[in-house]
Image (cartoon, rainbow, N blue to C red; front, side, top):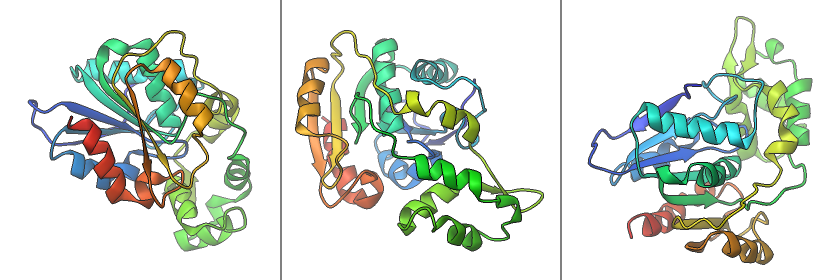
Length: 256
């Protein structure tokens, strides 16, 4: 599977930094951050399978998604990469560290632990399935229809980036059917059968409950060179809610 990607910077002397979005995300979500990182790295933002412009596949699990990243690195002759992933992308990144540690030099996991989580996206699946996007004539109309399911305007706009113009109205870019079927796997745990010695940063939002102190203890048992950082005044979408501090704290780790 050849993943859709966008590259920032052409200098082959700079280390490669690959950024992975979360569930219902896409590579464009990280454009602002990628431009800053590109001052120091050759940056690649990717659409994971069944998201954005990447191919759709009935297979969706973390082993397959980790293999996608390994294949991407092979295709572009990338070695000793830095891998950054948010939420679902963070779990993919951890799976790469388990399955393909030889391709990594550093790892950043944003606001997710390797544990299983309770279903938190059910209303979004319901919204995407129940709204007739083919009858929608504008993004404003789509946002008004989605407001019945999500009151937060920022989250609505984020989710509605999955829409694209169709012959009639709009349609979804993402492979909703497969994502919903695979959701128990996506929200499930990453098995880490042996200690990971790759330098790793777990970074969380101050107002997020995705990583707690118990999780940090468990993470320390699995990642032998781990740091923890917190982005103030930010929730789960920490990189968007406090971009300046997220960039500052990740660059502190990356430029060591």
